[in-house]
Length: 340
Length: 132
Image 1: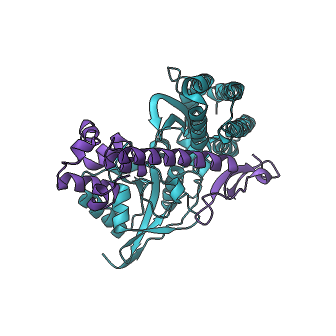
Image 2: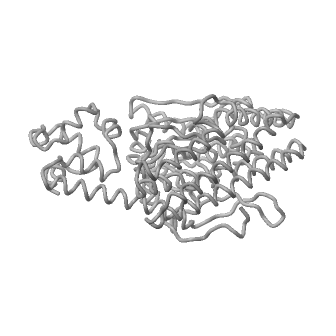
Image 3: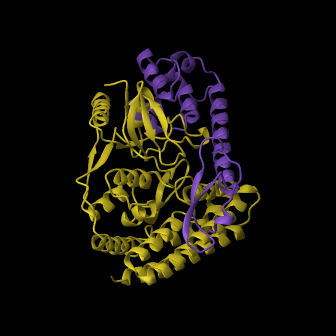
């Protein structure tokens, strides 16, 4: 390979890494209208799930978004785009494949683990394996990297790149490389139709998945757990659990309020594209939900800040979540009914 | 959230990057803004690290008292659990649990120690000579 190969890729910074890679790659392939909120909405990214018995970093496993990888896949499917994905058992093969894509002039998305990402702040380097970035070239043996959570582009050595691509554990990337294929221009009608389909899918995910742990029901489930935590785990551990919820909800990558503001931004844009005014009204409901999630985070913060906490603080937090669930349930019921 | 309400509390992000926040501008339209951090989040992250530090200190004491092997200690230092360590070393979980016993650890072959050392990104000497 030449010593220097820089592909013409425009770095974009986004709230969430998967949205960012997907948006950036589709723009690169000519879909200039793509934005992060649109990608998130078309990919039906909004979700809620609280998985019982599973622990993440010693705390409860809650998530405010759909499974890693689904956003790009779902959005692409709606737009008639194929996402070419490759995973590898051999590090050598994975290494060669990435280099070949760069040589072919194809910027690609890579799934990586965060623990060994040298440019991340040390405090953020946990064993989280569903981070995404774009590789857009190579210079002097170093990969040129566009990481959507960073303000500017960055680089990774060959050694570091292999390490992060072959991080182990849950959601291990296995060298996962992906890029869109057959990207054709999308007509306005096609985009409008896709938007409604995506909204209906989100409404289904949030309202109709059976069982108590997923969708809006999941928020009520977490509220029920919170009411029990202090007695079951003791004040200290219960406080740490609250901290974990806040981190999943607000940490780098959510755009604030557990992705609810991002979804509100999508509905605003969707209203623009489709001319449906109702979507704009419902966008406000998600802004409201996002604001309440933030207020709930502040309330939880009071609990884990002072080691002194009382059962009534936990009850208050749980009530706040039930309130949020009610607002989201009503909003998704409206979205379920919405027609072109 | 309104644009003027975006928190700007210095956090671990400073000097590395800023957070993209989706906020409403003064005309009520969505836009993005960058935040250098939020105290509520910072506190949550700090607490998580305090907890990790406590666990590491406790593991060190256990090694010192001869209750557990350095493998357990470094697992905690590297924020791993047994599942993850199993992924990095290729050893079964129950094998790793056995290697937590100081009596078993003492007799581990250099190859096995090297596998652990590689997973922890340290030298075999560091692993062998950690006494709490």
